[in-house]
Amino acid sequence: MAAKKKSDLDRLLAMGVAFLLTDRDIAYMLGYRPATIKQKRYRDPSSLPPSHLLGKFHRYVPDDVCQWLIDKLGMTPEQASRLVPVQQHRHDGDR
Image 1 (cartoon, rainbow, N blue to C red):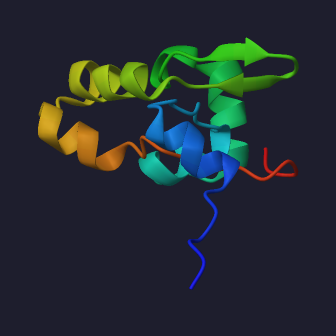
Image 2: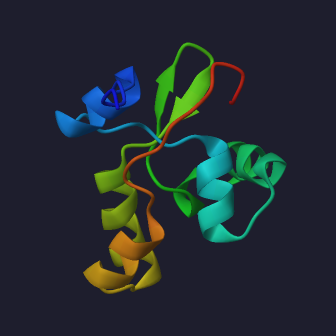
């Protein structure tokens, strides 16, 4: 039986490449709708983890989100690390 070929994503994950989180990921983690995240960003940006603008989309570094959960919400590092999905795979159409 032939060995299964590793996908590009599997190779990147094996090298330790981390993926950025989207508004949808943050909304899921905090229990909001994605539209609410966009509203909060403009009305009260301090109520969200720090983000980076890449093109017209905001992206979040998982380690920054963990630290924000610890600092702002009082979570323990273990709780925060369980909540943040470290390895994400996005299809080109996901935003």
